[in-house]
Structures are given as C-alpha cells and as structure tokens.
Image (cartoon, rainbow, N blue to C red; front, side, top):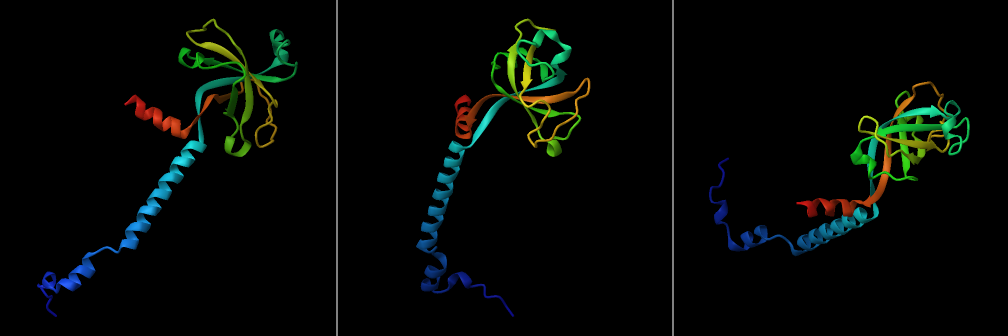
Length: 176
C-alpha cells in the first residue's frame, strides 16, 4: 500500500478540525497549572526548614566532673562539642540539639534530644566549647534506652532557627 504524499493537501475543513486544540483543554490545563502553583506556594509557606550547625559531640556523665553539679543533676548525662567560630556566633543557650549516636543506628534507635546550657568564650585550638544537657538522659526519640560507654560520640545538629521554605528560596534569589 502506497502512502498518500498529499496528506497535507486535504480539505480545509479537515485541516481546521485536526489542527485546532479544543478550548476546554486549554482552560483545564491552565487551571491545573494555576492550582499546582498555588499549592506549591502554600506548602513552601507552611513547611519550615531549620537552619542548623553540625558538630561532633562526646557524651559524658556528670558524676565524673564536680564542676557541673550546679547546672546539672549528678548521675545525668551531658554532651560536649567543639564548635568553629562561624558556628559559635550563631549558637545561644536554650537552643535544641538532636544527636545521632555513632555506635547506634538512628534509624533503629532514634535521636537523643538536648538543650545547650553553656558556652565557653575561651577558644581551645581555635574552637569553642559548648555543653549540652541531655534532657531524657540516654533515652532516644524512639523511647529506647541506650547503654553508656566511655568515649561515646555522636553527630549533633544544633537548631539555630526555623526558616520557612518560602523564605529560604526567596533568600537565594536575593543573593543573586
């Protein structure tokens, strides 16, 4: 069967029907795009994406250090971290800290929550010491108690401030 080479020369009525996009498709398409755009803007306004500072921490017991009896109860756990100057200026007492322990998978055990209780202004090898009170001791966010061992370490994220995703995106455009 031979192809008709004159397909483009068909009648003008057929060309008008085949070549024209129906108006309802354009209206619905524009409406869907508009609704999706409004939904994305709304979600970026509602969703908060926190600014954090990540540091390595060492978990310790208060009973081994007499100096902290006035700020922490004896037998409780706390964490110490050395922070660079860039991160140190953003950190304030009372900020929330979430710690992922190196010996325990945070997918299985969860995170340990703490609060910054002390900042030392004297640098140690150009880093500053901060102390974190572990509110619930070594009980994780999954309500599992982890066993303490000497030299216990973890990776901490200090929540500096909650920023809306919308503001974070807008901040990127303002820089450029």
